[in-house]
Image (cartoon, rainbow, N blue to C red):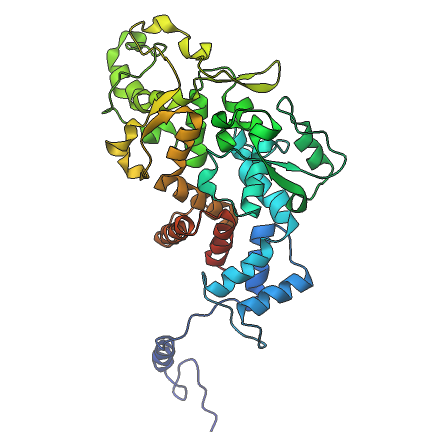
Length: 408
């Protein structure tokens, strides 16, 4: 008997019967299938290091993923598992993670156009060194810290130029093995009390203290370390008594613009940007200037825009965002006020938003997209909790994110 099993006709099985069987099979429960350990290892390594792993590194990672006993055709580990995090630790030991991935990760924070196409500088080198050495990243805006390279043939680091770092990059120096930790006070001669981590590096000062009114340093710190620009932080409910004279109270003759727009940014920004009152960047000399006890002239420009506005007397600052709508930023246990950039940096880096922003930036760098779905946001939240409770170690964040990325 030659009974066909597809199609329709007098001697063939009905199509409806086969469709029902297929649906029954599809309804059976299946265990989730993950990529094999080799594929997972390769994907994680490339996301972190930017290049394929060597044969030895691939073996080390696959053994970590399947517990040292990788059977042919074995499924990989579940995304985010400890095994994948352990495998990712191999990738964060690769020189290219430091010379390429971390350089491109941090370089946009050092300029106003957020470009990676700039020479290596002290800001980026310090970020790289902090990640390599597991330095608590919540000190990034307050520590007396500076990383330099001990490679031979480099100009001495100088507060007046970037030659040390630019030459290191031109010479292809291995940053993972040559960066050494020092202090800004020791290398540049900046008073210890005036050092504020990345804020007072030459890279940051040349971009954000130069000219202007020093509000740029505050604004770009918000952009790069709070993942928010000023329009998303606007709060028109704060007092206006610390807004400087250069802000017109009736721009274009319309006071509503001031009350409904200008106030939203300046009422919170100006009291905190006052922490930078003694800082400037001398473009002619090529270095940051610090004048303790003497407010920089830039704080008094355009005083006749509103002569009754605030006249900056010193570098005291106050965080008016600890109350009102911006309490959602999750301010830490800091005092909420103080003097100078160091204490303000500690205030900012102690917030929940600072920590979440660092994790979100790593997610985008490693997963090649911003966290947007509910799953992504839950992943960022979980890793942020681990980041803050585990000593603010950013290298582990790279490992955890790579292990949790969809498709890992």
